[in-house]
Image (cartoon, rainbow, N blue to C red; front, side, top):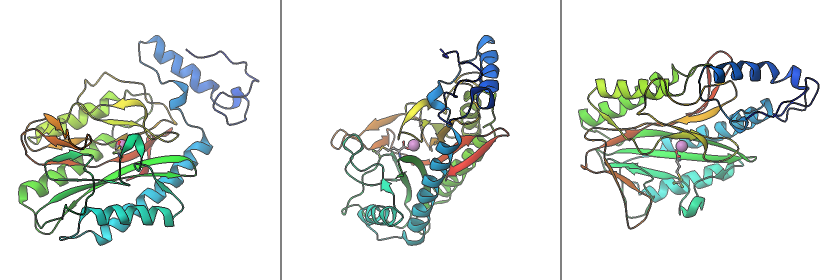
Length: 291
Ligand code: MF3
Ligand code: CO
C-alpha cells in the first residue's frame, strides 16, 4: 500500500522536505493501526501544509458567499436570485462556483426547500415563501482548491416543528465535529450523528453523505451518517472532508427527480434539513475550513 521511502528521500506529500522530517513518524503510526485491523487512508487523502492553506483560503470565500446570501435571502425571492448572488459574489472574491457544469449541473448553487433533501436547482419560477426552510449549498474553487459548506435558512415564521428540525440538524453537526479526532475511525462521527438524530425522533438519509474535498470537489472517503461506530477509515491529521447529514422529519427514504436528474426529495413528502461543514483533521482534533 505504502511505497517504502528512505529517511532522506523527499516526503511523498510534496512538501519538499525529507521524509524523516515530514510524514515518516506519522506513516509508522498509521501502519501500527493497519496491523490492528484498521482501514487506513490512502496518501491522496492526507493534505500537506500548502494544500491545507489553499483549502483554508477557498473556505474563506465559501463562508463569505454564504454570509452574503444570509444577509439578503427573504420571502418572495426566486431561488434564481440566490444563484445570481452566489455566482457574482464568488467571482468578485476571485473564486469559481464549483457546481456550475459539474457533471452537467446547470447552476452555481443548490437550493433545496422543505421536502427537497438536496440538489434543488435554482429557478425563476421557485419563489421562497413565508414558512419555508431552505438549504443553500455553496461550493467554491479558489486557486484550484475546493471547499464546500451549506446552511439552512428559515423564511419568515416557520412552524415550530420545522424550526426545531433546522436547529437539531445544526446541533448534529456539532455532535459530529466533537468526534473528529486523529487516530479514531470516521464511523464514530457518523454513528454519533445518527444516534443523536434518532434520539430526537428523526431519520437520516442513508444513500448520500459527506466526502473528501480539497484537491477535487468530491474525493474519497465517502462519509456515512448511518454506520457502525467501529467502521470507516482511520482519521489522520491532514485529512479534509465534509460532514453534511440530511435529517428527515419523517422516514429516511428518498426519491430522485426523474425530470431534472438532480433533485432528491423525501419519499413521504415530509421536510428534510441539512447543514454542511468542511473540516480538517489536526494533531489535536479538528479545524473548520468552511461552515
Ligand atoms: N455541494 C454538494 C455536496 O455537498 C454537491 C452538489 S453537486 C452539484 O456534495 F453539482 F449539484 F453541485
Ligand atoms: Co458536500
